[in-house]
Length: 218
Image 1 (tube, rainbow, N blue to C red):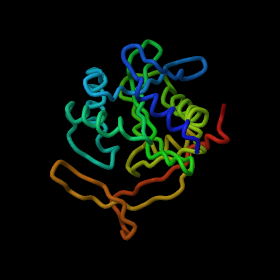
Image 2: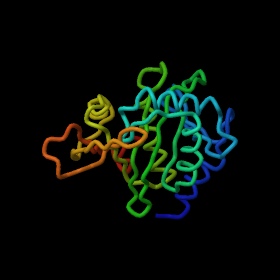
Image 3: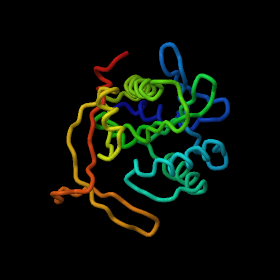
Image 4: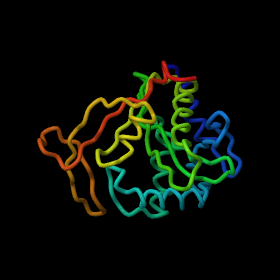
């Protein structure tokens, strides 16, 4: 893929600012919200975003493959040391039409050679307009197609998460496969590891293919 596509992602993170974002994606028609890249520069990350991300990580801990007690310091490190330098990852905060930050949504594991990425960290953490997350996903698909040149987007969701049914019924996602998960207890919590050798797993990881951004809605 064109190097320019990678540079668009890098630029979106590099110029991210708050409270007046340099880049903002309108969500919905008519507009019901917006998406702005999370600031990842050390010392510039808004404390309000860190507080919300930390609160939501703890509230929805069983939606992740790594379960631990999040702290604001750990969230700051995650943004500056993991999201920021990763050339295949970006995280957006979702604001409603009144400017309240109500959720998050990202892309990760972007394979620039194949043109595929993964929808990641979709959370509605506060009261939000009906359908905001679905509209945010559609906005992200279009941006991934038009700005990043991606061909499609997949998602991976734990089988005990009700979002699986929502994604299939409301977001038009198609289930590709389920991979057994093995629980591993570590010092700071629990890790769920894909393990195809398990025959009666406690949980599985559901692979979904969201509407292809190559042939998706415009």
